[in-house]
Image (cartoon, rainbow, N blue to C red; front, side):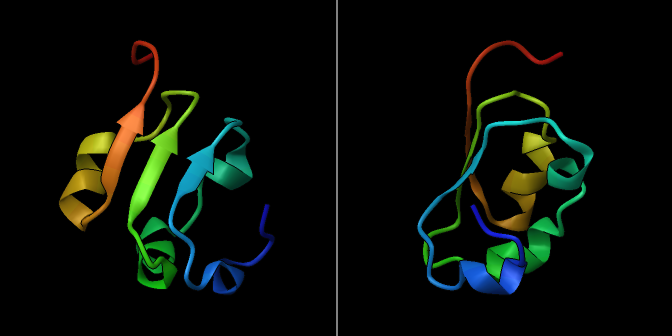
Length: 66
């Protein structure tokens, strides 16, 4: 887990495992710029995957949208 997006430099995957407000309100564009591989796995199916795809993320999720 990281507490600052700047600490994510060079990571290969972002995994969302909780739907807390702090996680949902991340600056996903800024995080994208830090990642080595722009891959996100939404384990709660709460993110707007279409918008993230358009921004350049490779997105994966489980379950049905809520």
